[in-house]
Length: 380
View 1 (cartoon, rainbow, N blue to C red):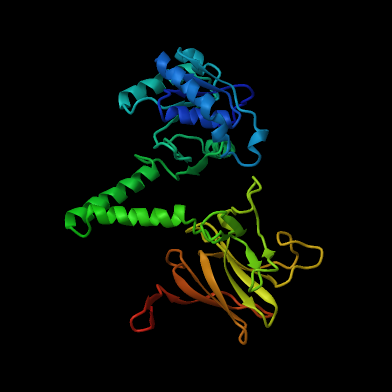
View 2: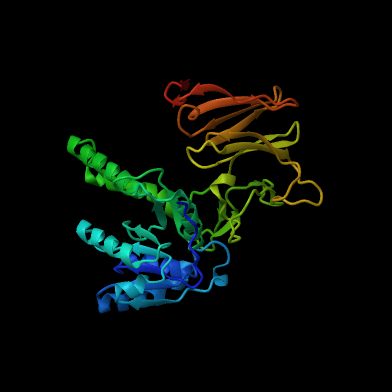
């Protein structure tokens, strides 16, 4: 037996149980333009969910790719009776209390009441997280994951697919491992609670408050009027006095048109300028641990009649690399050097390649390179 995409039309998504977490699931689908039925035995809980959706559906729409105003929010309503709530649903998300017997009984009832092509799913993730883990129960048709991945992305969620069934969500298991190690460190006396709090605050401060994303910003001396001068992820040129700013390479922007945010696949993270040959080399980040990074080359100037985002002279030199960064060019030997920050066996290395007329192939010079600042040595 093969699985076919359910015909959605005006059919609803049904959410079973609408507590604090579950109403957020409902709101994501409503913001994405899908009709939603909310089912909970408590009239008070159902009313609170309706109030939440009315107050927040526009805010959730901001996460939708493209023009959020072009998507009309879906209709939504509450239903007390289980059979009526799931009668015509194409997707049912069970979000009842974390009690195994309650969950089993819910699925027994869903198996009896829901349409034959309805997708049944369970849920358990923390609040305010847009990531959705799609995980098989061991019997799920593989085509369902591709189908849901597209729909969830359109609703502003960030779907990822686990490769096989697990006793818990991957993110939950990851955090459990981190918290276990924190407790071990505390028990061993390696660090106290204050130290942990300081580390966590510092990291979040750098990432969130300081926005260290590779962009160049300007501000008045009193800290006001903060503006982005050079967006992150592109290659730019500017005079020493700040004049004649020009974007030389702008790889791609997301569907919502925000040129300050680039997908990680197209993010320029390091450049090398060959003034002798009139060339620019840059690395594109790729996804972490995916071997999808690349090194590109183009002329320093933009060809006549073309733009930074559309150039005919951009050349892909090397692809399927670890997360390459920090390129440097030797003018005389036409040799390009770079490092990366990915995993073994190919990552965490120092590399070189000839980039003359007959380009060579990447060669790993060293693995696990470290700096000994005290003795000014490079250790391998």
